[in-house]
Amino acid sequence: MRKTYKTNASGQIETVVVGSLANEPFTHADLIGGEYTFSQTQNGLYLRNKGLADLTFTINGETYTLDPSQYFYERLAPFTVIAIASTGAVACYGYGLV
Image (cartoon, rainbow, N blue to C red; front, side, top):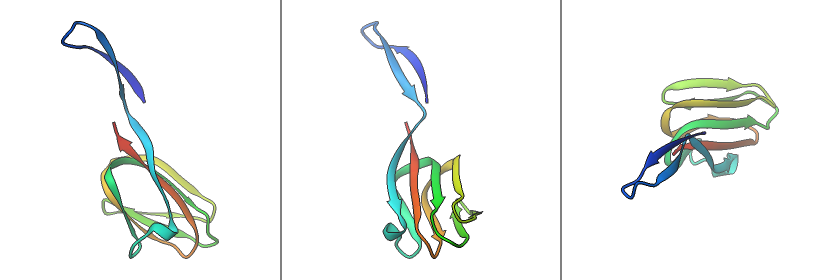
């Protein structure tokens, strides 16, 4: 995240935080039909494959594969839905727009 400053209508300088915040953690148990829909638009993702087999996930038509114990931690184009194909446990959370 980064800070920017702006002057409000009263002439006071305010700090504005711009970036993303981690939110909406979920696990494999929260998937519905292999998908999770975030309640707000996300612009990044942390996903860890806690299983013993490869995991694939798709966001915005792009598919990624994670080996067992591997994690994905990246900024992405805005999205609300992630599809995950996994036979094991996952740990995941999004980064929401600020």
